[in-house]
Length: 324
Image (cartoon, helix red, strand yellow):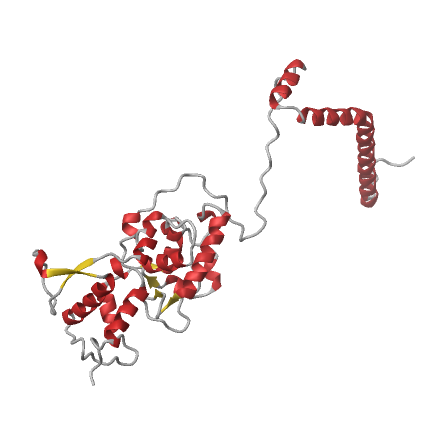
């Protein structure tokens, strides 16, 4: 007879415990399999009935559920499970809240805007509503700006913004048609350069860009203005004169004559003799740039080409010339 006080082999005790646990697991699996086999017909039956129920309208579904006494079950379709973000560049859902109206009275009168701001306004988007992309800095210095997709009302608007900004960037040059107000340097980021909003709009009007907001269209002349120039009244004095109220001292002239007279008057205001202009120095803006900036970009100066053509007409007739 074995003595119960004899210590038990630890390895044998471990083997016994594992053997018992495995036997219990096997018995549990068999019980589950037996239960599943027993309930399989009912499970398939319920699936078929749920499928049939899903094909009914909500009112019909409610009627069936009420008739079966299953009032605690919702008659509404099961909610769709939203997709989870799959990567670091996936953006959050766009806000459904109404967007604030654009302060057109401020933007339309701004002396200069960034090129990307002009592209946003062209699409009826407030530039201040665009949220910078948090990973945009990874593109490197002098690139961008980049914005969160959720900042745009739709994917279509986001794509249109990229297209408009790309073509505006191509047109932005020192010589126009969109004049850069900042110095052009190697590697310069044109998208953040300062430009005239009226020039940007004029360029896209010439490209027949659709759905330009009305406040922007007001910055450029209509087709009627371009085909039939209106008449202006300007002082006929050779020198720049103060405001005159006597109608007898002014005469009606065509738009192109008004443009030329304005340039001559502005040259004299700036202290230049139109027929003896100083020659431009290298890497410095000349008299033409000085006059262009002083006149501005509103009214009849809606397009950069207007000023250039008026300047060339005066040069061809010898009314403005460089010092000998």
